[in-house]
Length: 174
Image (cartoon, rainbow, N blue to C red; front, side, top):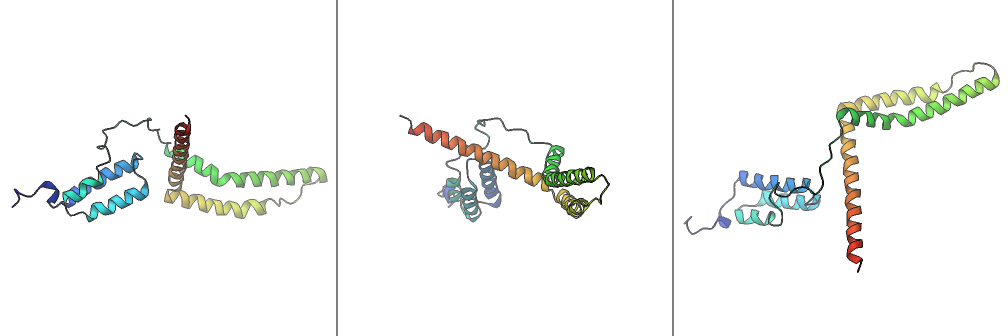
């Protein structure tokens, strides 16, 4: 009976489905699939019972690693750079506000000719305590790397949008 059965009618195993899922993930990472299409194909992959149901899921994709990337992949920022950037974003508004209020306090002391009560502490203190907590929790949960991934993804989306606009503009020109 197996002699008459073609490969498309043969049952696929878990390992076969995993190979297809891995190839779909590579296609997503390379930008060949959007997230919605990847999700649809992944669902179909795990629902497939035969090789014939798996084959169409990859038919329009090149074999993984068979095509050289168009642009070199940029080196990701180091953990230290990412952490410093994130902490700077978290604390920058605090530094600005405390700096401004301290300058106002200092000017009022000079103008009055006496050392006044340091009232900027009421802005700096509670807000600083909250930021210390936010910083500690963010570092503990990996927030700097998450924010970096978001920033990179947003930059990639902007670049893709620019490229699409350029292609549309080229196609409209006579």
